[in-house]
Amino acid sequence: MNKLKLAFLALCALMLTACAMGPQLAMPHQLTAPPPLEGNHGRFMSPYTSDGVLAEWVNNARNAEMGASIGGMAGAYAGQKLAENIPFIGGWIGQEIGNTVGREIALEMAGGEEVIRGTSDVSFNSLEELSVWMYVTHSAHPHYQDALESAMSIYPELKTVYTQALYQASAGVQPASAGSSSLFF
Image (cartoon, rainbow, N blue to C red; front, side, top):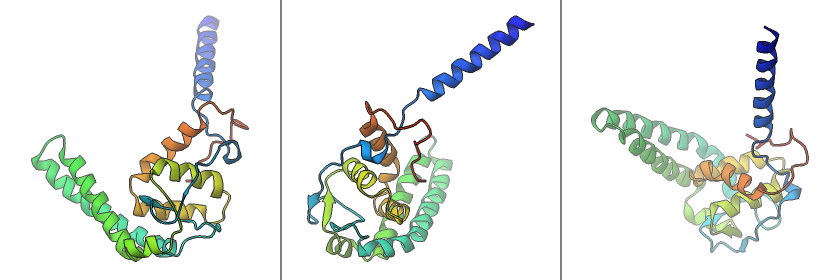
C-alpha cells in the first residue's frame, strides 16, 4: 500500500513538473519590439499612434465588438445549417463566413478602412509583429485590453496569432517568475 502511495506521489510530482516546464511568456521588458512602419502603408494598422495614445478608430471599434459578435453568431448558425448538409467541413465554412461578416461589420462600425488608415500613423506588414510590438510597448497602458480587442475585431486572425506570436518571441528568454505568464485576457 505504501509503495502504491509513493508511486502515486511520484507520478503527481512528475506531472506537476512537466506542467511547470511548459512554455513561459516573457515579461514585456524582456522582449524587443519589432520596428513599426511609420505611416499607414502597412497591411495592419496599430490601435496606438506614434505618440502612444489610442487611435481614434479604437473607440468606434470597441462599439463594433457587438457587430462582430453578431456576425460570428450568424456565421455559426450558417455553419450549423451547412454542417447538416456537408459533413466535416460545414462548421469550418460557417466559421469563415462568421469571421468575414464580423470583420465587415466591425470595419463599418469603426468608420471604414479609410478612417482606420486615416487615424493611424503606425502600421505593420504582419500580425505577428503587431502582436509583439503591442505587448512590448503598450501592455502596461490602462486601455491595452480595449486596444487589443479592437484590433481583434478588425483583424479576426489576430485572435489566433496573438498568443502564438508572444510565445514564439518569448522562446529562449528566461521568464522573470513562473507566475508571470498572464496574457491580459
